[in-house]
Structure formats: C-alpha cells, structure tokens
Length: 142
Image 1 (cartoon, helix red, strand yellow):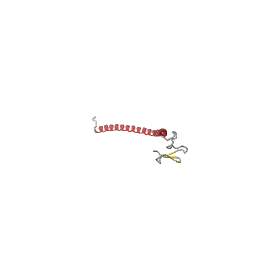
Image 2 (cartoon, rainbow, N blue to C red):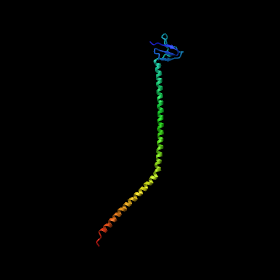
Image 3 (cartoon, rainbow, N blue to C red):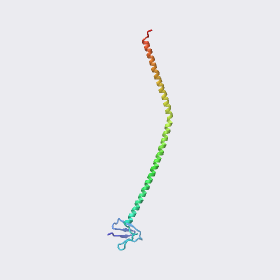
Image 4 (cartoon, rainbow, N blue to C red):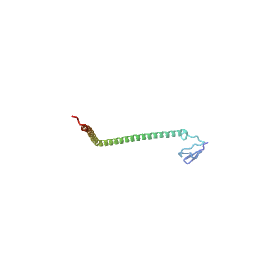
C-alpha cells in the first residue's frame, strides 16, 4: 500500500527520500479520488522523460565527436604545415651548404688526381732507376 501525503510543495511517499516537487495548484491523488491521466506520474511519463534524456545525451555525444573530429583535422593540418615549413628550412640549409661542399669535393678530386699522377711518375722513376742500377751493376760488354 502506497501512502501519499501532501506537505507544502512536495509529495511524500512511503520512502521519505523519494520526494517529488509538484505545483501547489495541482490536486494530489488520494485514495478516494481517481487520478487524472494528465496529472499522474506513471511509467509512460517517466519512460518518455528518460527517452528525452537519452536522446539529448546522444545528441551531445555526437556534438562532442564533431568537435573532436574538427580539432583533430585542425591539428593535423597545423602539423602538416609545420612539417612543410621545417622541410623547406632543411632544403634551404642543404642548398646553402651545397656550394661550399661542392667546392671542397672538387678540390679533393683535383688533389686525388694529382696524387695519382705523382704515384704514376714515381712508378716510372723507380723503373728508370732500376734500369740504371742494372746497367751500372752489369756493365755491358762491348
């Protein structure tokens, strides 16, 4: 048996922790008068309110996801732009150091070529010196 009592603007049921706020002009159902459908808090009304809350929660979640997706695309775009700027700066640094490096490589190749020539001349000198030594060590018989 549900016991309902009116105290000021609240309706108290068997459980004091369950107090429902109502307008003071509304009549509370009593055991002697049957409740009207528009004033009755029944499971259909509660179910409708719950569905409204769930719908609102789902809409809020969709909005949150839209915001997150938008933020993600903005951050990706920003990151892409920053990477492009960094890449351009790196290419500029490469081009700035390319000329001195090429000059040094050209000089190094010239030096290596000169070293090869000197090695070849040294080898020819050794052959001539070896021939001279043989000629001096073994005089020809004429």
